[in-house]
Length: 182
Length: 442
Image (cartoon, rainbow over all chains, first blue to last red):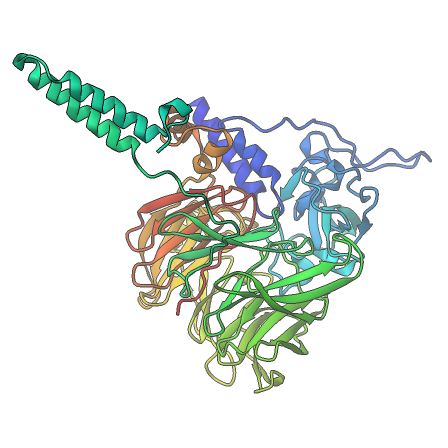
């Protein structure tokens, strides 16, 4: 396989993996025909140092530790725009929006400690599509008749407005078991 | 005719004068007669061309209408970003019209057609101030010929907003009642009487989702405990019966995707692992038939799987099932398909493979302002990868077309559903959306 072929295949696979719903930024990516997407900074800012000196969770290098990356470890079942790219973070909504009170739950493995964590993907609501950092990963996702495992549902339906803006990824705690697929 | 001295002579007359002068010049020695004759003929032709009638002033205020009978190769293309659905003719590639949606709908509007009533219905969740304020939900009624609003029915402000936009509402076969799936997040169904244009009642379907018409005034729904329920409405639209099937699938280990396709009173669903599951709703209680595998062991070993947003299509006349497939692992059930495998459902055999058209060049060409058919487009087609497709839909006529869409690429592939040949690409169909809707034929 030539270098160009490999590049195009990699591009196509990335587009395929990340393209599902809400993702009109994929359109921009589609324009970069034969090109690569923007580089993702290898930073680890998911878990800040505790100011009181207590032990802090191990950090993760590379995209798996970058909350603005689709490859961020908590994003294994996310479907939407990453709030970390929209004026919020993986745990907070952008200004002016409202965090939906309920949502679906994923189970993601943290590469830093090898443990499975239950993740809430609370949507942020009240503004139109953020339009940045679209990400769709479906590990453990189930159809909408199984709502609390379904990332297709607009969980802003539980907020005061159904208008969807972006999605967060909050750790609830350690999961007792991994995803069904693992 | 105005005189030349007026300085205002019409072009056609001026052309004829020139022709006349040239005819005079033709009174020349014989050896020049042939040449002069040719010149005169050419001049006459030029004059005749210039004498064509002028473009008449246009009448102001004309608005196009659709034919009384929908075309058998029409398709609606909803767009979640542009918040509308547009109608295209697969035979010509032309766009025919638009219906709008609202900000409260995540997947774009899904127009539902009633041939008997000559109406199209769209579910609109509306906020008083656009993105905020009091929410009210409506079933908006459009005339199917003029696309003008004929009326609206207010329903409970709980209509579901779901990314895949599939089977969120349906016109039942009686064309009397329309049902809307609600999720707030509790699940229910709102019933609208299309005859009286009134909301009838909200039927609770706890633990179940989506609406699948099954005949008459009945619809089915899939449930989180691995069953299906069929609901029958009485003559006034109230729930008359709700019967549940036996448990027939595992919602965690090998769930059915909710993107089923209809064959009369039965629906065909595919599981994540590639089992085709028919559910028959013709009896009092829904009955699941034994499932059969879409993939051989070798194909499963090669990691072939179903996947996409609207990954199945079914042509009832030929009993051909079209399935978007790709090679991937668990969790790839929404990835776009790299191929379309065609099955004879009666024989339970794969009978054909259809290539997924690469839609990226058709999408990018107008954005890059490359001339159609030029070298730039040629180059684009050489270097563009094929990202596959998320959605397919097939028409139900004897010469069916298969429409193919990638959810994030604004171009539509139109494929001959029997031969598998690409008929055309339709560019500039929008930005993003998961579904395709083929209006039911007469």
